[in-house]
Length: 116
Image (cartoon, rainbow, N blue to C red):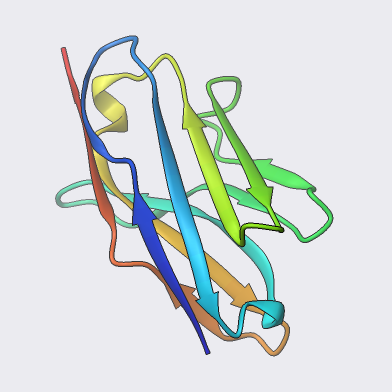
C-alpha cells in the first residue's frame, strides 16, 4: 500500500500564495490518480484538484484560475500551487490517491489559514 504525507500549509494573508506538497511512498506504482481535497469546519470534504498519471487535470469551480496542480513522477510528489488566496480557502487540505484497483489513500492533512 501507499502512504501520503503532506507539507506546506500555514498562515497567509488574503491575496497571498502557498504551495502544498504531497510525497508518496510505499507501493506508489499502483497509484493512478492523485489530488487534493479540502474540508472547512462544519462542511463536507470537497475536491480541489486532481491529476492523472498522464497529467490531465481537473479543478473545483471555486479554485479554477487560481490553483495549479502538478506532479513530479521522479520524486513521487504532487504539488498544489495556490495563488490569490481568499479567506474562503481556509481549510484542512488532504492529499488523495487512487490506485488501479480502486483503493483510496489519504494523507493526514495540512492546515491552510487565510487571514482577511
